[in-house]
Length: 458
Image (tube, rainbow, N blue to C red; front, side):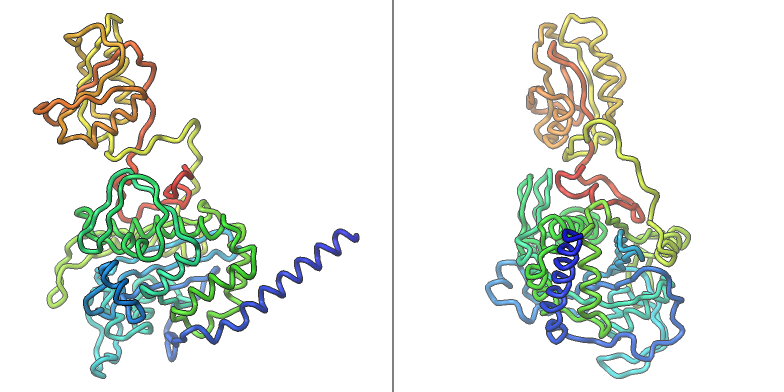
């Protein structure tokens, strides 16, 4: 009884400290009233829906930071990032749905906040709703498109993002191939990195790493958010009221939120997230039905797939997971590689006198996903001890991916060999290990769990 009483006192004291250290933060939050006079809203469901938008605000960034992180230029006063973050009623799951900023949208009737003109509902790209009518028009447009009632609004700019990452001590991300974007200045070598605020901002803003532009960027933003959750929940911050206060102060000192998002809500979320892990979070992007949907006066937009997107939003409305739980595969996790095995063409040769070895290697690589010719042949040299991956230097990333599936193999560049890689099976061959692309092709609407994209969590 004494032990139970002592524990109760500690718990109550911790809760009291938590409220005490946070109660003064309400005055630090810049408030906005995005729900004023809103009518005909969707019916409320279970759980809590927060519309989180990232703007290009950079007013409080120093000149040195502007130059270092390529943050010059005039802001467009629009939203770079738009997400619905759903916290389940039992506070055991977070579902994050990214809404592409170039989504085709229809605004409701409104007053333009810049010109004061009255507008009827008209087509726009989704991020333009903020420029025309601020947070309120953004919420009204999102609610009209999704039929999901938004409970709270949180607006993050460049400054608050950088401060949050810095006060957490950085966030770890990993990449198997270099990431370089001349527009943002991002320049990461392959490997693991702990990104501080400015570099993290470059990572989530980069749009010119590949041809996928915004859709690829949203995948990185989701991956970063999963890593951010992992950092916050694994570092003891949520169990330490003083640390929690410091993080919260860094975040809330430079964000805008609705009037109802205050100390009590923060404490409830903080307590709930103590039991969070990357596997408690799930991420997706609204399924796109048509890319490059041309709209007169608006330009090229992304049109949502009506049936698939409705299934996503129905899950939010009814507080259900976005997808059924997937069983964890047995055996060791696949090795991450730079290139999808499905894109790698392979010719297998038997470099030994062991009959059938070529076919065994061909079968093993095909089972792992490589595009083998299915016609293995004998090599000119039949006394090969160590398996060789011969490749044209122009396909060096494909060669690294293939070599990862053949532990102990030797990489041998051969100029002019062409796109087909060659495996010369040696006497050391035992098995091919499973590999998977580090950044697999992902259609919009694909749901991933946080533990599937966080470094070292597979």
